[in-house]
Image (cartoon, rainbow, N blue to C red; front, side, top):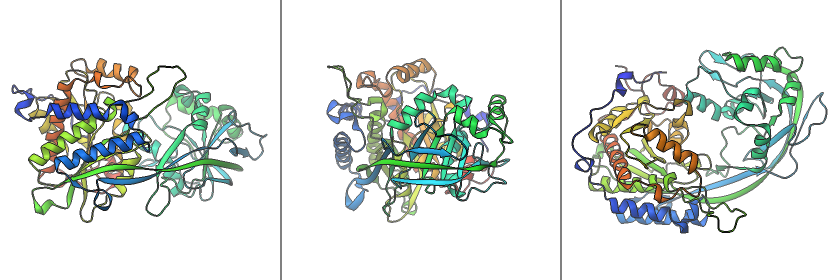
Amino acid sequence: MKFAPASLFAPLALLASPATAQVVVDNDLLERDLTILAADDMEGREAGTRGHERAAGYVAGRMAALGLEPAGDNGTYFQHVPLRTYSAAESGNTISIEGMDALVPEVDFVVRGGPQVQSGTVTAPLVFVGYALDMPGYDSFEGVDLEGAIAVRVRGGPVSLNSEEAAHFQSSTNQRLSDRGAIGVLTLFTPSMAETFGWDWLVGYLSHSSSMTWIGPDGMAFSQGPNIAGSGYLSEDISRALLDGQQFDFDDLAAAEESDVASLPSFALDRSATITFASEFDDIDSPNVIGMIPGSDPALADEYVVLTAHLDHVGIQPTEEVGDDEIFNGALDNAVGVASMLEVSRLLMETPAARPFLVVALTAEEKGLIGSSYHARNQGLATGQIIANVNLDMPVVTYDFQDVVAFGAERSTLYPAVRSAAEEYGLTLSPDPQPEQGFFTRSDQYSYVIAGIPAVYLDLGFANGGEVAQAVVFSEHYHQPSDEIGLIDFGGLARFTGVNYLIARNVGNMAERPAWLPGDFFGMTFGGAPAAPAE
């Protein structure tokens, strides 16, 4: 892979002129939109609820008032996203392994089905595939046959992996296994996993939580691993027993994790297993809200920049105590992003960029980037295509920020457009202060990256007390009822909105179509936009 040279991250000179000299942001509109979207009557804006429907209606009304053209379904602002929620049924989930005593549910194992088949049974030979990776210099699938097999894998990967790449490989495991013919997956619970979360927590989470995906125009629920019917996790004791007597046993695995060994062997286990799964399905509908801003250059009319922010939050979560605040208003997460996006839209309507813009308030980000995944694959354009994404998600505008971080910008030719915007606004463009978090793959821009589209996600940096301010928000207010508008520094929100407008404007006016830099991991993995020429 190729990153931008360190010189690109040199601190930018602060400009003497105030932010209002560059962009005249309407603070009253920003505060009104944010106040309305984070109000109690929006009921936390959970995807598929009346609160989210009400918020979507408000955003559509604002788009109409600003003059954006409707770009949803059937001449409306709404792109309806069919959603499927799936969770483990109370009974009917079992695992049996050839040559082993009967296994006890939620003690020895936990099972989850997929979104396409509600119940069934998979019996197949077991094949150990280590980290289930396929990358230059590391192939977990060499010498083994997964066709019609149940893959046995280890969560994680070599420490040498860049954190963003590691996050990609972790989230796409089932796709790699399905592509090679696996029909089931068993994950071993290892000492490394135990350092992250306990077995009891994992069992409770997988047994009682739900997952969500979208249903495509063909009526099939989307799955990265459509061949994978049933999955399960095995406890540490059962994981140890399963590898007992093999060429690479559990002690070898634990030692490899501790010593950061770069590769694990792959081999058939010479025994079979049966996974029986049963799920509860609930199909609902929730909209993305989409408006279009025409560009000023007819020659670029087919090259759309998509500006995104997720509208949904986590809704209402009842407690047993009378008088508790049960509404999770999500002011920072992500009413701030939507309000900022609407103001950026107003500014773009006043002075259109060369390229057209799609402005999308996304549903179901909190459920796993579902609304953006649907939109990236179902763009709804009669002609043309999306060529870049600028995403806004939960900027912690609670302090006087002095620097910004542009996740993903250094991977493509978007970087100069972002750097210029930060410089014009008198802000330092800082490198990622928490690379181990892999933020580039954790918000909606990643859905567009998977579709081959260069993307950038702007956040605030750690300068001028930012590290402490952000830590307070994530430790005390993230996904809590206390995430309310009283936390917001509206002056900071106006500055954040102004620099986002400049980024959007710059991308819309780029002389050449945005492209991945040569050798970039995501550009090579997902292709899409052509690679930029080497310098």
